[in-house]
Image 1 (cartoon, rainbow, N blue to C red):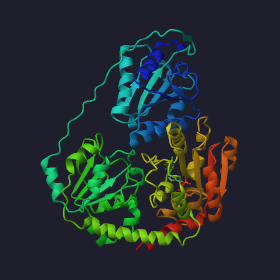
Image 2 (cartoon, rainbow, N blue to C red):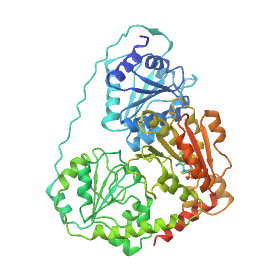
Image 3 (tube, helix red, strand yellow):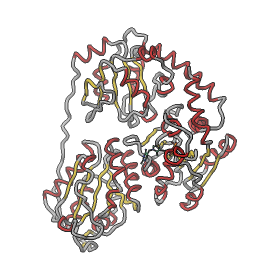
Image 4 (cartoon, rainbow, N blue to C red):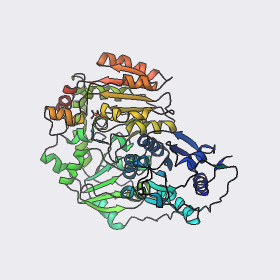
Amino acid sequence: MKYPKIPLAQSILEICQQKGVKHIVISPGSRNAPLTIGFTNNPYFKCYSIADERSAAFFALGIAQQIQQPVVVVCTSGSALLNYYPAFAEAFYSQIPLVVLSADRPQHKIDIGDGQTIRQENVFANHSLFNVNLSENNSLENDHLVQMALHTSVAQKGPVHINVPFEEPLYETVSELQVHPNIIEFTTEKKPFEIDTSTLAVWKSASKKLVLVGELFPNSVEQHYLELLANDPSVVVLTEKTSNLHHPTFIDQIDTLITPFDEADFKAFQPEILLTFGGMVVSKRIKAFLRKYKPEHHWHIDELRAYDTFGALTNHFETKINVFLSQLLNEDTFESTYKSSILSIWNDRVAKHKEYNSKIPFSDFKVFDFICKNLPKNCHLQVSNSSAIRYIQLFDVASSIPVFCNRGTSGIDGSTSTAIGASVVNKLPTVLITGDIGFLYDSNALWNNYIPSNFKIILINNGGGGIFRILPGHEETETFNTYFETSHQLNASHLAKMYGLNYFKATDETSLDQQFSAFLAQNEQPSILEIFTPEKVNDSVLLEFFKELV
Ligand SMILES: Cc1ncc(C[n+]2csc(CCOP(=O)(O)OP(=O)(O)O)c2C)c(N)n1
């Protein structure tokens, strides 16, 4: 086998292999040549070449999101590294183990006028769980730090940065490994958890308990506990599409339920206990409600972090969700009308929703209704920001379909790259639903040789950032069109042609119906279905929906 001659590079490669890191996403450059040569010459590693570092990092994020194991991105020195930042921040807030390996010049060559050189050390410090600045010579300390970084990305769930100085010559190789890093076995201490009797007493005595679930990996909670929650008349469970948690009595369309609420409804809905788990919550309305009508107790369950999202956090239970629920829940039920009264409102909303769907014109709303009804049951869904993920919340999605979205920072800068990364390691075919601005923003995602032939993009082209028409403050002015909506006449047909993707197009219900089945049936090449919706109709259809729910 061929190894890079530089011992520091050899050590890093050895450690990655011994620690089971498999997926390596490499962007081109010279300074990183020792790592690139090493990774690509070892068949143990699955290497990907992606030129655009912003896309490369989101692609890696998509892989790591699915396998929940560290994925390494490797780049050269200079601004290349800074292009990792959007995905790095997303990994931080979405708790995804992304490992950045950046090649650098030795420190004495920084800020002396050398080319392609910037201050790389600790450049992601604000969002990094662990920063390592290796020294040029191979050492025990370097080995230790690299392993600490990999370990931290898993144990603390998030991104880490390893900066590696290399001096020229960079391309020389040897046939024998010269280093044998000392591999450390990290033992993660499992903190025993025991629920205290006062918590149990509070839970038992409360008649209004609201469970709100944020972003969660599928199958994170045992079905038995979901049943116990579902059977308790004092418990209402609110989920989102990204919660990936399902039960017929859980309400998964939060905004549909609460948008029409008046003061009295909100007061009646105000919980005594708010129990939360999972990551980011999409619904702005539930946040506004709980910030105003604060629960007496807000308990959050997470082994690592608890955000005080509603300004009401009283307890952070640092344990696994299943462990906590196993100690909290039992077959006892309590007398309460909390759930039944909410479910009766909910059933009414469902009926009104159905009625509304049947009478509206072709629009984003109608299109999302169609897509959610017609998605294949055995796919994996990736959704972009921002109105796409909000629309999806308003419809039923089959429980067999896992849903993911970059909600850590809610960026529009990497949804397509993330979806492609996820599709590469996913057993299920991946479908991305995206808006036009997000799609155009990340069009370099398609500059990628690894897109599976059954990967599909549903692109909803409403001529700009449709979200801004929905948000308060929308006025039909030139300033709005130019600076908020960024209105345009572009379409994806040329990009599809350039990147060798099948292209389908729909402009109304009939063509959508016809094109959708053709789009799904075709698996020889990745495909785009671009659906053109009327820019100026979409917002009124959505706003009217909320009005007609009452
Ligand atoms: C990197 C980044 N820049 C800007 C924003 C602000 N932003 C949120 S949504 C959006 C427009 C999205 O438009 P599009 O992708 O067409 O989706 P639509 O809202 O029309 O569904 C923008 C610019 C962001 N979230 N991320």
